[in-house]
Image 1 (cartoon, rainbow, N blue to C red):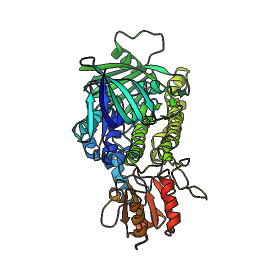
Image 2: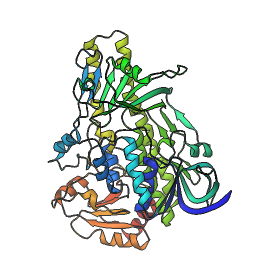
Image 3: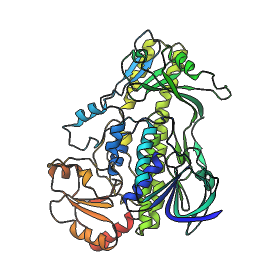
Image 4: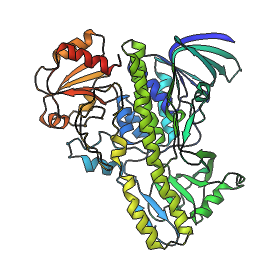
Length: 531
């Protein structure tokens, strides 16, 4: 084994989470090395939904436009069809606006309840291709494809990882100040740290059949995103046109079927012509969250830290949030302005999000499970329709995606008093510390979010100069901070205070109407940077 080089941050895994983490570090001027076992992106589509909050975070990294160009057409519907008898219309149709429909819904709304970015449907393999292409070209990112992580040792000064080049079998050591495991549900990094996972309920084995077809039988009930059949299959329209994934549960101990596509057809209840079967994949669905997200200088993010079923689209989206949160904090550590509590705050902020999303995933998964069970038990069509209609609210869930508040974070300047409401279907506009602040369009047409800086941003909405001495003091102490003066009535109304300190991940760290004195401001800066 020969010695390798040194890197500030070593990222294991170049999927959407690892690539987002590398881009976040690069946004703050920090170099990283990304090692990835595969030399090509996945042949399987995996995820297919990027929620609006993830799109806002990816917009900061300059990739939102390319994602939309590669994604499903903005006019494609986002409907869920629940079917029982192919000869009859669906038992229930859950309708949700297309991307175009959402843009139209919010076009004239500027009260902070609208997302800056709507969701985007995109196959996970294509997202991986977009992000890996970006990190491959970035001068601050050393992407090493065809490299496997084998083991690690660490001390107070850093982490030494043993890696293997899969092309020739050569092993070498790479020293890093910090290491991030973004290597999926079976994470080798997690196993190397000895971090366990807490499971909620049993895991189940599934088979995915990824195929191409333009048979109109597939759209007999109109265009859709998902069809859930009472016979026990789910059909996903991947591109709005001709690519599909049929999924069914395969009980443990049952052999893999000789013809998985035939099983999909049987469980959907109708036949169709498939032009090409592009891939067949077997996977386990589970609800699990790591017992902790950190071991010394090693962190977990994405599926390495939490695993969900696809229902609700929480997996990759939770992981993207992890990557952004961890990325700016690691950049602060490398840059020398992070106190010891800042990196501790990663777990304190992100693990509760994963636990919440695990329950939301289970909540929707319950409907997936009960629908075929009720049908098999003899429930009438009106009973099934009434049950499903009662549950349709679940897909209109902006609050779940945008409403996370870091209430237990040690680096948020929390306030006394009643916390703002939380609503399932809406974004509640607030600058309560720990929240994502309201997205507001200024009178000159600019989006306030687009004006936030790469580090902290002190937003001065007083129309005066309250923020100038505060910004000067912060810069004097080495804190990367942008002073943004906003003289806009609509923004001031929705942002609730004259002074709002926004973190790099677009969460509020502190707010007030009056500028604190020098000693108090110094205490605030120490608090929000974990000193």
